[in-house]
Structures are given as C-alpha cells and as structure tokens.
Length: 95
Image (cartoon, rainbow, N blue to C red; front, top):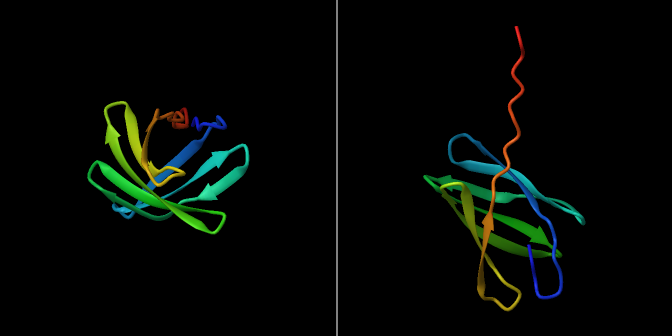
C-alpha cells in the first residue's frame, strides 16, 4: 500500500465460516491485526480493524482475479485498493 509518506506491504488472510461470517487478519511489518465484524454476502464482504483506538471499516468486492477494497483515507476520502490474491496450495496427502 502506498501513501504520500510511506509504502507498506500488507498481507490479508480471509476465511469464510458459517456461510456469511468472515474471519482473518492483516499482517504488516508492524505486526498482525485481527479482522472484526466480518460479513459476507454474495461477491461482497466487509470487515473492520482497530488501529490506535480507531475502527476502520473496509468494503470489498471480489472481481475476476482480484479484490477491490474501499477504505477511508486519512482525510476522510474513500480510497480504493486492489488486492491480488495469493492462494497457498492445499496440502493433499499422497497415497
């Protein structure tokens, strides 16, 4: 993620449980933050994170080959971030 003052790599981990609940985390060089209030509906999902006693809401849409994430910027404007999924290969036991 690029900001006017900085560039930081963020790694999001998402998991859907119970059909409509999203859990996961976001990892950066500063540590890990758990997702809260995660909800899934069709090809959209949302969640919040808490940073420095501030709750930041994220609205996301699954696109073909990527995820569009809208989040409020530092001045209150909406920023769009495009995430490129990286999926770890499933470990299948060999018989």
